[in-house]
Length: 233
Image 1 (spheres, rainbow, N blue to C red):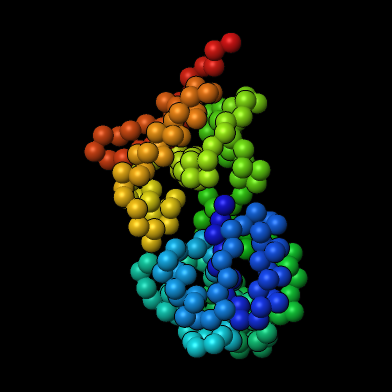
Image 2 (cartoon, rainbow, N blue to C red):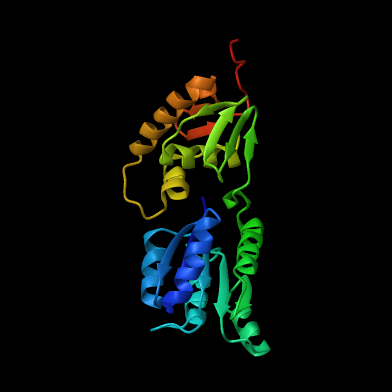
């Protein structure tokens, strides 16, 4: 599930965007000012920001420039959503680092399409399409995991962990990398917590004999292999 930060000081517009994004399967956080937006980005790096231009405090353009100049946020996907519709405004927004620029009034369907398009370009693994590795299938939209029609019950954290593994198969990930990408890079928990959730994930996958897909790479971390054992009749 992709995390979207909506930075909008008009409550009615923010709520409209939030409702539509949540219905589309996104996790949404709202910020009504530049300071609050920076706080949320510092807390947990979102997958994409929908950013208004005119905000209390610093402008959206100022925020975009600041994020683009910082190592942690330089690749953060940004869509400007603003009433400023002049060509010069669009040029300024894109030059400041926005990946796309949409003017108000706007269509929520178009906004959703643009969000998906930017995520496809920036982070394909963040999209809510079905992922299959071997015979294991994960559907982010319905939050179901299955093998040959047999469903696997997972908790929210184990689901996110498996989603990340399945969108990055065969790669080795350290505990700190998993904390950054699955829990969020400003969630302060012990790295050994990763081991606990990997253990739970393996226990859940044992039902469909896929527990061996999650491999421990000694001294390095974990990876998901595409090799799956045959299911006993």
